Amino acid sequence: MSLHPQAEAFLNQMAALGNPPMWTLTPEQARASFLALRALAGPPEPVARIEERCIPGSQAEIPVRLYAPDSDQPLPITLYFHGGGFVIGNLDSHDNVCRILANRTPTIVVSVDYRLAPEHPFPAAPIDAYDALQWTAAHAAELGGDPARIAVAGDSAGGNLATVAALMARNRKGKLPGFQLLVYPVTDATHSQPSYEAYGEGYLLTKETMQWFLRHYVPANQDKRHPYLSPLFEKNLSGLPPAHIIVAEYDPLRDEGTAYAQRLEAAGVPASVSCYAGMLHGFFALTGLFDDASRALDESAAALRRAFGTLS
Image (cartoon, rainbow, N blue to C red; front, side, top):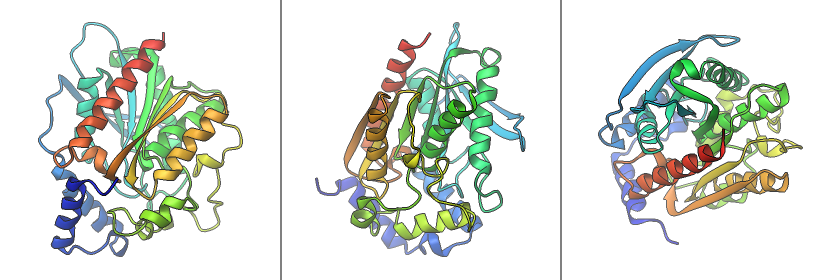
């Protein structure tokens, strides 16, 4: 379909502001700009319990934020990795998403503040993601959660880290999550999918911005087809948990999300895709701007509920 009227209005609003493209900024400037954009998410939903912690990782301590709804029984746990191209974003940038998922599922959300590039390039973020998954699985009961019902979730770069954490857990024989919720995930760091050409300019997230992210994240001599960078190029995706993948029509990352679901299915892993017609990359977290953001969050909560209902 054509660009959604709310998406078109948002793009016009951004153009009127005249802000420089993200790929022309320093990482520090880009981080501040990203947080300002996230202020458009709308007022935060109240959650019964929110707790800040630092958990031990194999290379560094990892800040996390827990969101727990009221319950007199152990709840399932969703480990959430924020988006931001591995360079920007933090616990605050996706606070609204975590609150909504906690309340609507209900689930204990553990939001992970993994290390960012360029200060900490690849593979720092995947290591933190894997470490956070293993720690959460080992301490689920302490958090008020059910260790038998754990999911990983994330958007964009966070979707990459969610599925890479599961892939690392399979490869290392660690604790596997029972489900993956991936929102327009980065699965192909080579930027070779057709949607990069169709929607790589003029639709908020651009090809140049993605290249800017990866210049900061990926060391110069690193093969971009490494499965922990580009899980689409993992030769064997069998044994991973079922996945639900959400993509946006006018998003350069659309095709790699869809292709990853197809690869999972071909490997015998149940995977479903939901494409939001007329929507842009980033819509999922902008609940104050896009009606489809709330719809996608409802869909995500429903997918998590269904998955948790099958785990024991």
